[in-house]
Every structure is written in structure tokens, then in C-alpha cells.
Image 1 (cartoon, rainbow, N blue to C red):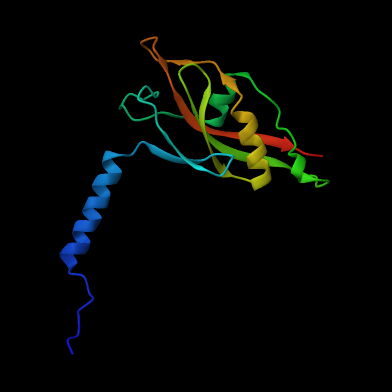
Image 2 (cartoon, one colour; image 1 turned 30 degrees about the vertical axis):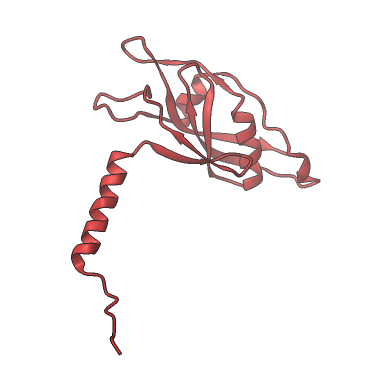
Length: 151
């Protein structure tokens, strides 16, 4: 009976790692986000995203994004929560279009119930559009911290 060698040659592993590195370096601007309906959706970084002087994508801090906030809705208590009293903060990744509307959200950190409710309200928020030095409107990408109080 022939015994098959199941070990991969070292060059095959090396090639696979190189291919993986190339794929990640060629397509770095894909963000996987989870919508509130639990269906997976892909939100790509807009071509017109704000960039720094090295042409890298500029990520906005929570403070910077909140200072550009024009209209917000408070986080509404989910009806399925019942009599539970929850208080806390969640972190949500957002992509804001050049018109100031939230294009995509991604839950990052916090209580799942708080994340669900905060994501739902953040999608209705409006921001003051970001303009670069050339006075051209740009999309914004960043993370925001949202407080909720379901007492």
C-alpha cells in the first residue's frame, strides 16, 4: 500500500503567503460591516475619502466627527428589551458620504443591545460635509462613541 505524503512543500506555503499579502495590499479599502438586520454587507471606502498629505486615508476621531454633527437622533430603547435597565457607551465605525449622510455603519465595541439601538439611530444622523484644501467635498471615515440610557 502506498503511503501519501501529506506535508506541503515549503515553497507552496511561501507562495500562498505571498499571494495573500498581495491581495490584502491591492484591496485594502474593503470594510466588512454588519447591518442591523444581521445580513452581511460590504461597504467599500469611497474613492473621494479624505486623505492626509501622504495620500493615505484620513480616519476621523470621535471628537472630530461629533464636532461636525448637524442633526442627531437619540438612541431609542428597543421594544424587545422589556424591563431591563441598560446604561453605557458603544463604539461604532461609520462612513459618511460627501453630502453628510451616513453611508455605512459597523459595530465595533459594546453591549449588543446598545450597539443595535445606537446603529439604528446613527444611520439617521447628518454631518457637516468635510472640504479639503481644494474646497472639494470629501467623505469621512471614523469611529464614534455613542452613549445610551434605557432606564
